Length: 599
Image (cartoon, rainbow, N blue to C red):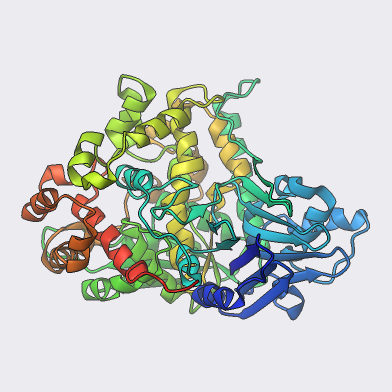
């Protein structure tokens, strides 16, 4: 829910309200229901509201608490806000609204920086203490809600999207060579705090940032994921019972924290089907939504999973909506999706989520989705391959995950952007952190706390919020993820992966859905690197802007264009290397060229 932005001056000047207005305008699609601004001395806030909890004007933001002398802008949802509100009331706090925003303000006053440890939900927020002139920023444990930063010697700006910061102006848009290495090695994942632009950083997940008036800046990590076995061994039956109980609680939290109807994005896979099964007896006339794409013809991959989503909708008697998208619409609408990308993303899911969210947002404001289940419960095909591999943790991981090895990267990128093998160093360090018993524990912890943040989680916030649609992810409840991190790897990998979810689905979800091979969001017109898709990429990579930028070595580009579907021109997880290059260049042309004009 919502889009937030702000500016804090360090030089005694007043905030640039015109820049704030430009940032807020750029965030308008995230919050179409209301807008607001606030200024106090060196600090200014902007807010765009998507009304989901307490739809009244009492929950307007920026929220100013005249009694506590605190002001807030907040994006997200606190699922346990009612319990916290009751606790705070027993402590003597009085409330003027019914929503979760005010609960954050009171929690901060009661518990200070540690208030974030009490919050269960997805959030990015900023609190201004009018008395101490301190600014406090925070982001949820899995970075479900984004928070981008642009800091100079004179001021700090923050926003819910990178393009909003660009709209404010004054951003160093030179490319970050280290971030580029991450981007092209980890299929567009650039872990916080970096982005591909030198002038924009991200507050890491599970972190807070405090700015004091004397110039002191304090960053703290308030949560880490423990991937060790519990002290008391558990039987398989106990693990499954705990999984069922924790997931049910997660789903219930995300259902009750809304004053508007909540639907489900139903892919037809196990994860979303299980969510429907858990919600069906709690939500009369549950709304479900599925998307599919036009087939490319005889012999081509089937382009929808309606066979399975239809089964689930019929089995649970949901109010089902399914949308079939023509290939021509995918190509026509792709520029819109790129224009809405907060960072460059190559997954075909991006356009799928964009087109699905457009349709779903006409019916509901909130949906649940199965994102995160594969990373948390071991569902991807590369996990068993990594487990069977030999070598160091880095070698076992990289040979089944990295898009290209460092030597190939140096052949691809122009010499002026060459760096050492910084991604291998980053991943090796992350894998070797303490509190992980086995290699796969290390991998799943890395996935849940770092890689997932800037791939599936980012797109699930970014694309739906472009249509004012909030997506909630029950499989990323931090207590459920912590439970799964304690599990023995062999339990997750049993029966081809995600065994705990398969087991608790038996008797609830049809076996045909549980036992089907894992599917992936098929967008055939983008999967097959040919026809209009290939010509579009060719035009981008041969454009004058691309040539002048000089980001890529031309012989590498020419090699990809000459044989775009050669096996060696796909990544280890089956992504097109050509699309990877074209998408980044396209994103830069849309968002950075020409350079924004502003002070």
